[in-house]
Image (spheres, rainbow, N blue to C red):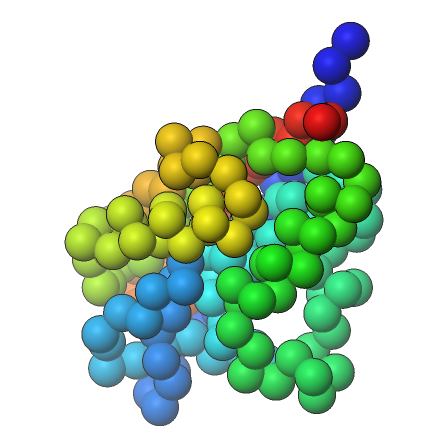
Length: 160
């Protein structure tokens, strides 16, 4: 029997002035960015949480606490590379990743291909195994009011 693991991740960050908007490792032109201890890359954080969850290793807050100055302003793709190492050390690889970014603005479609490439490279998998979608919430809730951006991600891990 093949050893499969499924994980789910969720992340949310508030939009503020004076910060870069980085999603999936892509710096997106925007008058506002996401507030957080690291670069606040909401998509990468959700994917990382999905992988860590599938491994049964808690959440990314346990591995990269916002109280630790080492992670202040950290590039989330660098943190994701550490999550990849945890996964690989336990003998797993990515079966697939499917993620959704929830943002009223800006439009993310022009950046999705690069986000997929960044995550596929970081998790050492084929780009065909990484799917990213973007949606709005039709001006409802905090994402619809442009107060923040959220992301959900699921992953399937396969034992090597």
